[in-house]
Amino acid sequence: MLVADSARARPRRGLVAGPDFEFFLRRYFTPAEVAQHNRPEDLWVSYLGSVYDLTRLAQEYKGRGTLWARAYLGAGGPGSWVASTDGGCSFAGDLLLKPIIEVAGQDISHWFDPKTRDIRKHVDPLTGTLRYRTPWGRFLHVPPQLPRSDWANDFGKPWWQGSRYHVGRLAAKTRTIRIVNTLTSQEHTLEVGALESMWEIVHRYLPYNAHAASYTWKYEGKNLNMDYTLEENGIRDEEEEFDYLNMDGALYTPAILLYFNDDLTEL
Image (cartoon, rainbow, N blue to C red):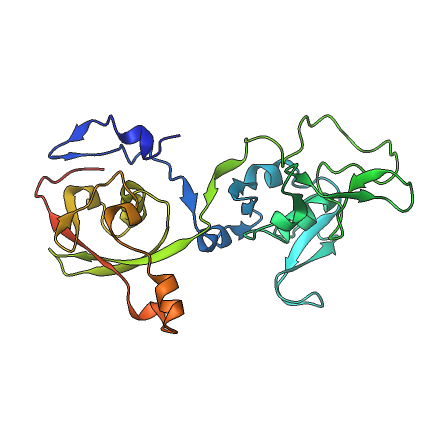
């Protein structure tokens, strides 16, 4: 994975040195970004500080067992999932996918024991054995309460163990910044992770300006070190001070100014 630390020994593109954004992967994702991936065909969740893309898992088990379809209007309310016998439903998936699909785009850290990083366990009142606690319903790779001949346990590690679905870390603290293009006078407001490097913020800004790396990024007249975070560049997080003074922190958003270098870098 390419991150800011691995970008230090970077090639030069024209007048600007920087990572190859075609293969660049950010380390952090905000809760708002995770929340956008809230569909069976684009299914992300976060837990214990990390973000996971479970889309492949949902596709793998799609169509196994009971059919489920999203009922936007129905007894279950908007966004609920109801059993369906209609083969033409918009999405078909195993019954055991339902608890996972219902939390798509959400943080599910409460499912886990932070010490073991495993699903929380309890003593089953029926069998007296220690088993996974799933009050929201049994889901994929959780053994059934009693032995069953139709449960396949040849999947290897359960989906929540290992890193095969890991895409990055969840930003525990986010900040809002303004980016002002002095060439075009365009201004955009971004929510970024507090621990992101400036290169990662550049990556976030690319949809607004594909040549963002061709600019010199400045704050209060000083060039920013693109390997540093906002705080390391002297752009302080003053949220606690605003809270102490009972002031709305949204009234002030630091502005980063972009000055074009005229090298027409292609990303």
